Length: 426
Image 1 (cartoon, helix red, strand yellow):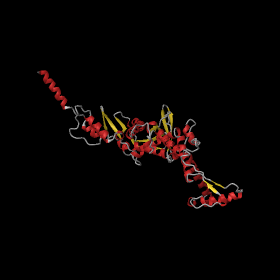
Image 2: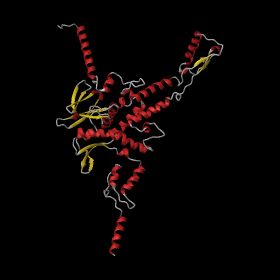
Image 3: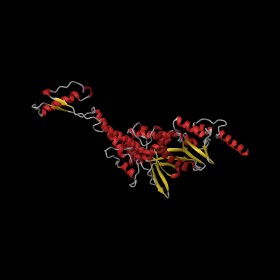
Image 4: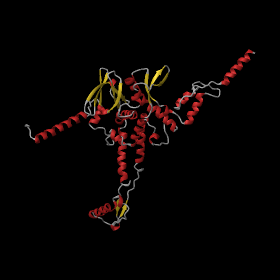
């Protein structure tokens, strides 16, 4: 016979479930130290902008310009060809037979493709300041997979000149890993443990201002983009408080909602409604929103035209082509270098091979510019070539042709040299 009644057992079961829930909540919480400024901000919810808006990763992505910049940078990098190359003297070639090629180029783990993986890595790095992935290895130390980790679930700590990473998994379990087993791509501002969060270090007020502008413009245009007016009576007509209340209530009842806004108005005793007009331009709302778009693009290093913000002047270049090439050079290249160096250091660990994203497609000019450059590279008009036909075809993703590996040498110049030799013999 049980020492407890059924009701008592149910009560104990409920208490046990409640205790398990509290333990799970505590396990999922973020550990912060007083030396970690950004974690302390999140813990005490002090990530408010000067506009009074709470800025988090979720609210920031609701700002169109932030979403557009993150989508552009992450999507562009995620779709770039990512290859493992082998060094052969002064040349390099794609090493498709490398055991890690499939994981880095196609499928880092069975749940996602490489496009999604690299997009998420760049997203975490830009917004959170750090991107982490667990390097799954076999007993021999060979990489088997790459698993994304939430930046708020990883705590790096220096130990004996190395970093030890404490990781909290979704199921509540924890693990501590050496730096060789964690792919860590930090943003700028590396302090020995973490990189700076772009959101909290550079865009707190910009995003807060954009959120405040969105909220204000929403309520502004909800009220027909005009404030309330007033009812004026002719001189000599006295209206006491009770009469004023009756007139005001009548007006709100018959003309407040959108479906009643165009009904004929009737005001007794010769009253007249005077509307106070104020446009969005008068409040400089549109100018403020335009400035915020440019400000967010400036922080991310994105040419404004690439997120739909067309300006009359730009410091990125005089044409769309030049601005796009500058974006690849000055914005994408530094991010890609961080990823490539970390992969080479912790995954490949062999100087005979290296990992690299291919930016050639983005750095190409338009078709006329490319073909003019190829014509000069192949040579002609008494100028020798410095590229072969097959080298040019490779740049255009075309297969090689037989006899296309020879450099062009001007024949006319050779004939002139032979003629000079013949003249000297005479």
